[in-house]
Image 1 (spheres, one colour):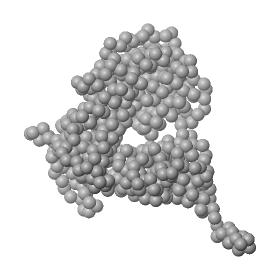
Image 2 (spheres, helix red, strand yellow; image 1 turned 30 degrees about the vertical axis):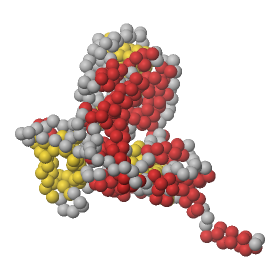
Image 3 (tube, helix red, strand yellow; image 1 turned 180 degrees about the vertical axis):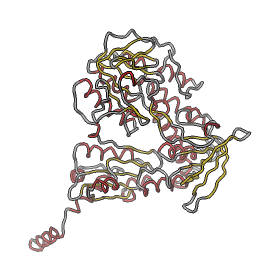
Image 4 (cartoon, helix red, strand yellow; image 1 turned 90 degrees about the vertical axis):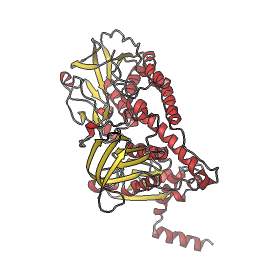
Length: 512
């Protein structure tokens, strides 16, 4: 049986528990069925949802995984990163409790290893849900090993041929190495081995100020590291609106992160003591670019992803692909009508919840001649910095390009009583509706709990619920979700036209 490729696996008993669940060393692959209704290649979120969903409907299913079941999300992505983020936030809250809430003063450094071990323990516990044994018990034939297409209707793994009526490719993506001079000469971290750390780096350079780079930069700074964050563009989180990203940037600077934007001519080399020397021409404070020479103990690269297409034998199956991943249509079919592809291997939305939603579409379309479209999905996302940034739907720039007229309703968190009482009143909710209606086309939330708040807006967009109906819904007081009702109330007030106001005035004068 193949060995796991990832370097996340350490000597911790929790890591051993993880491996026993998601890549059991004593696993024996079953004898293949004569033919499967569905073969799923890849056991990350998209693959697990595909396999479990099809098996639950009565289909005969095989699931193939060469590395760790649970994929990036469980092992090196969402789960461990949010464990680290939570620890960092707790440390920050403890340090600021005296000033903000009259709490006791906090002295000394925290124990980084304890925080990381807590994360590993929780990850191992969660891994039971994604385990090979659990999916076997669901009636799925689980194969651990290299899966490769050998025909338009067959996959081979561990020397055994799995024939199928339909197949789903769900092999995901992994960290990409940007073309930075010297990168191949220095040891560096990616999300695949970052969570091996047992000691907080004294200093760390992070290349890439996207969601992962910003989340980890802020967390490591709060956990005691000196952090240098390098970004080639003129600001962090460039997908988000500029004022949203600016709020996050301000808090990151307050947490001690040094942010170098418009980074050019970055070069890396290894010092004699094993540390890493970085040079970059960049702007620290929105002035003229300067030349910086930095020595850091560790380096994290968080720029880009590349699809896991290597070794899949896609040519033998007649499946077209490119450097961006497997080519699919709006119903997630590849160029081989028997084979579908979902998740990071085939979608620009590289989120766990998007992979889950796409897998559900693929099951319907593959097994039941469904005609569900990926483009019909309403997919939110969130960056888990402090404050968080969550978004769903279009941005104003998208509307302008498409010729759509918008009305914008913005509510500051400082107007929400619960946010004020929690000391989390920085940020805002901004909802975009189609002009002349209450139809929601998009929204951005910048707030301490933005990821939780965006769900109500996503629900409304999915089911065509407008801001007027949101205004009519009763929200408990005091909650931070009240910000959404306030946006609905703001829309309702626009319906009171000057003419209507005059008529109401006459009415009340007559009937005094």
